[in-house]
Image 1 (cartoon, one colour):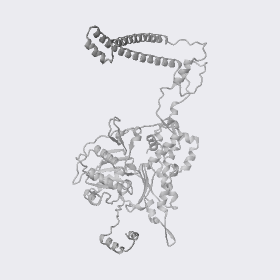
Image 2 (cartoon, rainbow, N blue to C red):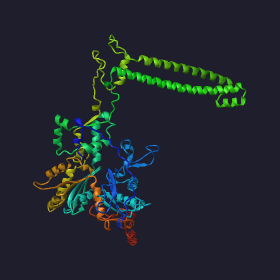
Image 3 (cartoon, rainbow, N blue to C red):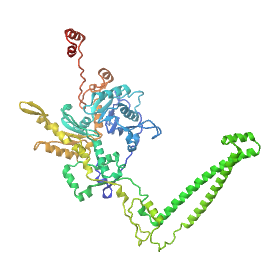
Image 4 (tube, one colour):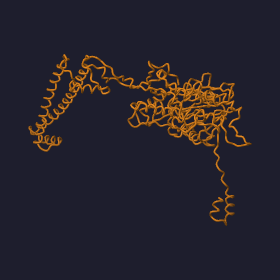
Amino acid sequence: MAAAGAAGLAANVFPFRDARAAPDPVLEAGPVAHGPLPVPLVLDNGSFQARAGWACPGPDPGPEPRLQFRAVCARGRGGARGGAGPQVGNALGSLEPLRWMLRSPFDRNVPVNLELQELLLDYSFQHLGVSSQGCVDHPIVLTEAVCNPLYSRQMMSELLFECYGIPKVAYGIDSLFSFYHNKPKNLTSTGLIISSGYQCTHILPILEGRLDAKNCKRINLGGSQAAGYLQRLLQLKYPGHLAAITLSRMEEILHEHSYIAEDYIEELQKWQCPDYYEDNVHKMQLPFSNKLLGSTLTSEEKQEKRQQQLRRLQELNARRREEKLQLDQERLDRLLYVQELLEDGQMDQFHKALMELNMDSPEELQSYIQKLSSAVEQAKQKIFQAEASLEVDVVDSKPETPDLEQLEPSLEDVESISDFEPLFSEETPEVEKPVTTVQPVFNLAAYHQLFVGTERIRAPEIIFQPSLIGEEQAGVAETLQYILDSLEGLYQKELFLSRYPKDVQEALVQNVFLTGGNMMYPGMKVRIEKELLEMRPFQSSFQVQLASNPVLDAWYGARDWALDHLDDSEVWITRKEYEEKGGEYFKEHCASNIYVPIRLPKQASRCSDAQAAGKGAGASGGGAGEQA
């Protein structure tokens, strides 16, 4: 997120961009195999945005990921938006018209709906130009959640191996990939990662290059909850603009206009000062139209507008009369033709035509001809009178000298004012003023502005104070202190044991790493440093580092990892290993989760069952059941 202070217009007015996503082009065929192995595909599978690209070996591995799109799908209906097939990511354009149809494969940050996940993978492979027929003949590096459930990984492996036929796959945590991408080569791999994304915030201790999964903590708050909280705040503040305060616009305010306060209470006290408020409030301009702004029209212009509206209405009625007259004339000609058949003695054709007209006798035909003839004549007379009255109105519509004796407006003038000025105060204009005087009484643009003041800090503050939205969770600072300094409650030799020894705590805080899209607020690093200063012992040191690109560094790190381990069979899961050990199996590496295999209870052998049954032959049925 970039600070938007210098991008504003006069008086801190900022228009909404309402950017639409451009459809992704279908790229050419992917890069050919380099050496004995094909080029790996790197997929950063995020709950907010998916990023996909190639890990090309060589001195220039390539720019940023070729695909970046929102991880949402919408199943269209027939005739809607050009077809009934599902639409994915950037193909949706603007999300707000389809907000009620959007579906995501993620619950929090774990993919649970594999049908929607398959749509995202199809979209990625198709637009990356995967050229292999019937399968994806490339290794895949895929990011997953911290402590990802075995069932989710099993379903993902089944999808990749069974549906796409990939040769091998490697799983890793996105924040760990970002951590190793930003880590200097000579720095130790012990540190503390604070990763905040769209749905969750994680705090991950790293000890000697490996994840300490037992002491990882998750806070179920992120950018999604901040956007929803900001939307509720502004909808309560501006109930007249409920429909215009959309989630997409709230995300735009969060990305470009929000910041983290170093001291939240002190910052709120600053906002109480009127001068500080006027200098720092951001006025978000909603789109509006001033075509019906009545205060900019003089009385002559209003009268001319009424004449134009009356003239258009008369022309519309005349056109409808002409169309009806033409239809009646055609039907009358048809009936007269049938009557001529009767006069000419062509009885067979006459009776046939009479049946087509759904008539029973010549008398009924004659009566209908008379009624239709009189209707046609009356319509012609009305058209002639309307044309004559229109000419008279055009001639008489010239402005005349106003009557000075008539001081009160007529009833028609009052109705015209009420028609064209529904949004203005009902004050009668002063008679002494000339008619051409324009009195602006209301700024319509200001009515369509959202004054975003303390909301700029209140929405992102929820990751430090979840109680602001009623969540019974600990914030980032409290959770960080719990990991570093809390007691496990193990009573041994009359002392409580700390979670980490002091030397390990010192090593962790020397490398506090911030990553994730929700860490891009201005002031985030300063706030974390302030919280650490308050919780750490006196005169202790610590270091806080923000990722160079908190959004894309996870993909860059996964790409670098794939290039470093192209030939390393100890980190890739092959199809053979998947078939032998199951979908939940994976191999650990520096950026992966900890593998915890499924331990099934051992089943007793048949001989032991028979011995147990023989021993309990004389016992009661209930006792035998208890022994079993």
